Image (cartoon, rainbow, N blue to C red; front, side):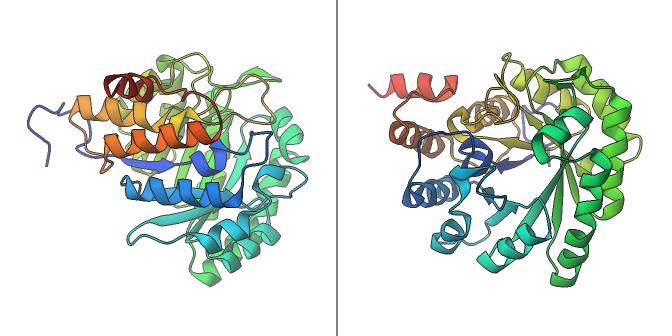
Length: 308
């Protein structure tokens, strides 16, 4: 039921997928102890995050920061009702994630041929083919699979990406059986109109309530793009605590929209998230301190200043 004061054109509640432990930490060059990653995940659950992407089962040579993926999963004190997921690029990664206790997995493809080759050393079609055994294994194991499409607005190598290209890749992931498709503005070049045009193209083939927004904040447009996606009917968004992140294969890209900034926006719109903003800010300040930096999140910095 829509809350009093809420915008009736917007959903009463959204789902937030917290990607800080994976997407947020993967670009860190200094080794982060496993115990810090585990504590971060546990603090996020305590703040009310119910969907947490805890790690990625990719080659340690590709993403050395997440080489302790299995140790992280096995060390987490699991909170009731929380889904702990993992990114898996192939069957070997899926099997490792399943053995470590991942509740669900995610696969990823790019809307850009150049980015696909730079990121995972294969074409878009080849990347899709790699996921067929993953989907078959997941179905046998009763594990649901989420799909990511990267570079949905722009690519660091090709420039602007056509909405039709995004729609084509998203449709293939949908046909393979992904229950949800996250549309990622990997380099953060999206603006509201371009985002809505992209979503319109994808929604021509996939129900909008099965789409998610994944907006990086390189140009400060992530919150505006969330609102644009909300207006299109999207009710799921990825975010990263403290604004952590970036992409190893997209030079200059900033992290995802900070989870605190997203929750602040939703609170202001009267849209429920189920996340305690004060506890989330505590978490953002804690992980930022462990990384010896200030949080990127403006909300975290502003609220921290009021505590002095």
